Length: 160
Image (tube, rainbow, N blue to C red; front, side, top):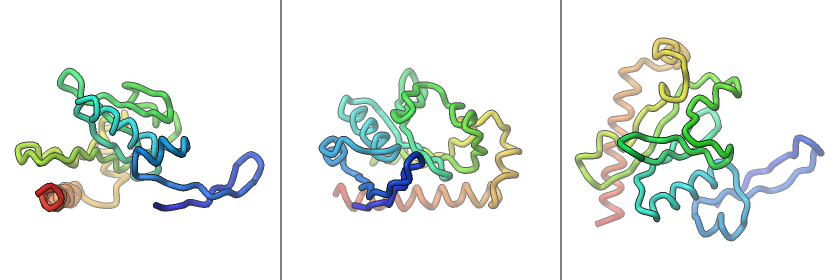
């Protein structure tokens, strides 16, 4: 695993902060931040038989979504937030890239295994979002398509 160096904003103390990718490590350590807790809630949802995906805001935060009643519901365990997708705007964030990861071996689901969900998490219209981005929309879509193909190949290699 990785370890980050953390400086407390209140007292200035410096400590090592381990980052975990396994649910058992997070449960054992009882420590984490958004990456650990969103991964943990994602694993809980899936263990309970729910469809769930991991959402990454490229600027600095991650959370999960659970599929309920034909729609994806925002769940942020670090913020104790459910179905509040505009929460991050109140932080003053200007979202540019927010991507949901929903790996599936089902080839009929491959087109949504990686999805740009930025527009869901901001009240800005797509024109404003595209202006903030450094890359044109067609390049972003091509990158998502290419990454979906790589993900599907990797999943097949691991599973079969």
